[in-house]
Image (cartoon, rainbow, N blue to C red; front, side, top):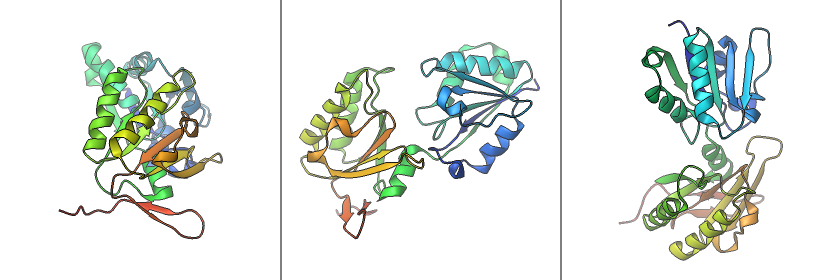
Length: 250
């Protein structure tokens, strides 16, 4: 087969944070597939067809990309951040596994991108400087009971945490439950970072003690970073620096 599929991460928002590798893949593409706002970040040009689609059709989008690659197209499937973090890489491979045998012979590559949690952490300092975990708070593809279990275990293990998709208009109660659980499980006032639209003109960064966090501080463009029990705040003129020490006392 002469076609190919590149699954590419566009980073958190700023053009400067798109890797040269991804830029080169987009320059060679005949077709770009992805969620509407992500495809909108790709410049139109002769010879390139854009295929934007809704957020809840990941498998359909993946199959469409694989079909076009099977027909000889050079397809780029775009995600924000990194395509392997709550994004399209898994959807493409799920489609490959369940699809026709010829899809397994396609040239398929994953190109990494800068994730929203890493961009947000860099803005604040180094809150993910020791062991950490990332949890998607959306219950669209998994039950809330599993999310709650993972939150409790992560707090018990004293991980710093990064939360994706914290609060949507259709399920605002989930993040309220998350904050209640953390206040109960953590038992301290560790710093929490609300990083909205990092690296875009709408960027906003708030650093708030856990006990003072409210659900309204987050939306679907916000990544929430929660420190562990050792995470520290360095006060200075302007915004403080937040970091988690690399060493843990025995």
